[in-house]
Amino acid sequence: MTIHATTIFAIQHKGQSAMSGDGQVTLGNQVVMKHTAKKVRRLFNGQVVAGFAGSVADAFTLFEKFEAKLEMYNGNLQRAAVELAKEWRGDKMLRQLEAMLLVMNKDTLLLVSGTGEVIEPDDGILAIGSGGNYALAAGRALKKFSGDALTAKEIAHAALETAADICVFTNHNIILEAIDHDERDNA
Image (cartoon, rainbow, N blue to C red):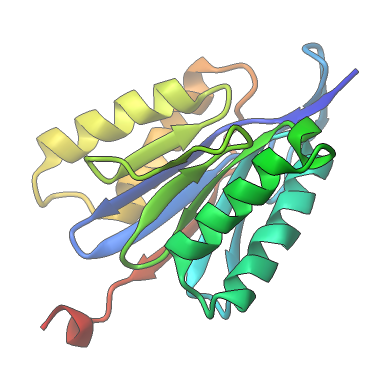
């Protein structure tokens, strides 16, 4: 049986970047093994947030490789993501990894996959994992119809709550990380 981890949601909204993830890890399709896994982490001195969905051991391998690429390229998120995707796709052992990553800094949000994909969304919202489509739909609706009423953190949390209400592989133990954009950078 394969151990899987589930839903990650990320958004850039109103000068803030936020990522949320649930804590559930399941064994196969029947047993919850852990309720409090931390699938969203800060990297590169807190400037980058990354989240994974998929096999836990595979995701840890990818976190380590991605963090090494960030160090190698001095925090350049896009370059690190592209180089990770190239290595992931080109290495016979890495191609066997069953996981996906969402990575973000204050300027950029990307999905990175083992098929060589590095995708930046048009609307500043991405979600992965078994509850990803539920979280994505909820997040898009909240962003569209809330106007300025909700922050990126509030949307990220509410999107994960919605996914947890619907998806049996997503729970309500939500980890949320946010990066506030420095006003001096926006001047």
